[in-house]
Length: 322
Image (cartoon, rainbow, N blue to C red; front, top):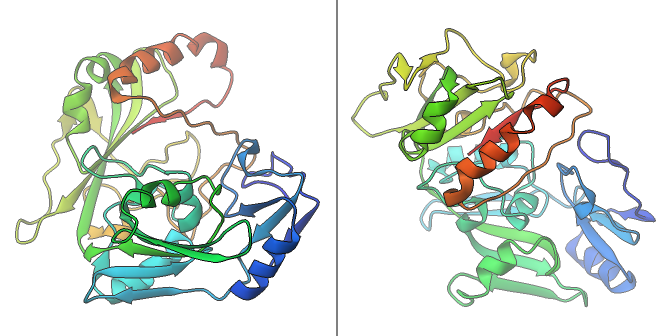
């Protein structure tokens, strides 16, 4: 068993694939060491174990929307790209999405996966209830109403609380989003006007290959407000020029793998992610690392990486800032 890109080999002695929650409970009771395995979008040893891996891929899929309560119930292996159909049919949406719709909901929430937007919480902030199998094999449920203090830690527990079998997510009325990509943002503008740039959209990301003095791409996503018409995007932003065509964050890769750009409004689930579910977003054998830093230190972190530019120049080295 390997990770998403195939460059990390896992050392688990076996992979368990229960078909029912009851079977999962028995497997947990019988295992001395067990770690849940999601969509394997991981590039280090956090998902590895010398014990047993357990995958919920063979459990029945659940993605049931409750329009009256504005809730969505999903099983522990559903991917974000799969649940949007049930939400869309019910006229509902999530407040935020990760850049990859290919990842599992439970895994993304357990690792506090971010999404983007200074006004939008990370993905586990949408969790209103968690059902999981504890280490002793018993089924436990935590809810926002009954366990307001413990639920955030359970939702983003890195798998330490148990194997998540169901999640309940808070939803809201469906909405449209438009996004535009800008090329070649001057690094000085990024450093000096970071807060202004971060506030330019509901979701804002920067991609850089560390060319001297330039941040390669600026992605701005904005909600389409009811009755207001499509958002207006200027031809230039602080020296960055609106891209004349679609862009992929990694130079040389096909932008067809990315969601529609150029300010064309579309459903929330077809714009908030950077990538499309029906395409492969990666370049194959890649190594990704993520560092979460306090916003106050964002520019200092950027400068520290920029100082390494000469050392990494021969590599395909792309950094995303959100």
